Each structure stands twice: as C-alpha cells, then as structure tokens.
Length: 85
Image 1: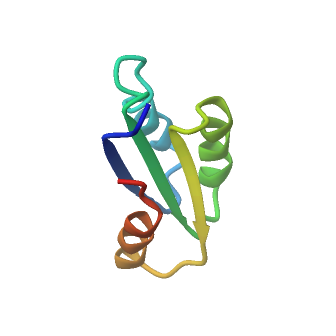
Image 2: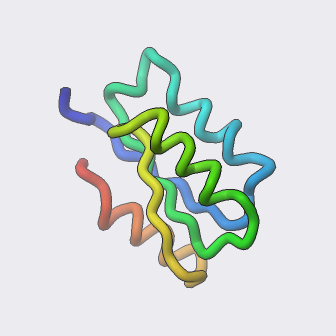
C-alpha cells in the first residue's frame, strides 16, 4: 500500500521521550498509511539506538536518518529530502 503521509521527527538527545513519540505513530490503525522519518541530529545518548529498534520492528514505517549535529533547520530539510510523499 502506498503511504499517504510522511512525518518528520527531529531528534537530539531525547531518549526519555522518543518511545512515547514513536508509539503514537505505530498504532495498527494508521501505521500502514504513514512513514515516520526520524532525523537524529548527532545525539550523544541512546536516541539513535532506540529509533533503530523501532525501525527493525516496524520496517517501512519508521526510518532512522543519522547526521552530524547541524541544528533544527537541517533536520526539517532532511525529513523533506527523505520523504516518499
């Protein structure tokens, strides 16, 4: 099924919150219609590892994009560049 919505999530050192955020998108009622692009902006905590777990568990729904720390504007642009919609 083709995705109808791309969601871009900017992430930097948010290990305490990222699971709650991603759980809201992997609900079985919507996950087939969306893609969640998480751009990790060079986190120094467990954020990228947690997102990677979701990427493995929900292939085609959650995608981790890693980059060196470049600020919030760059994460928005990264999400746009990787979106399928």
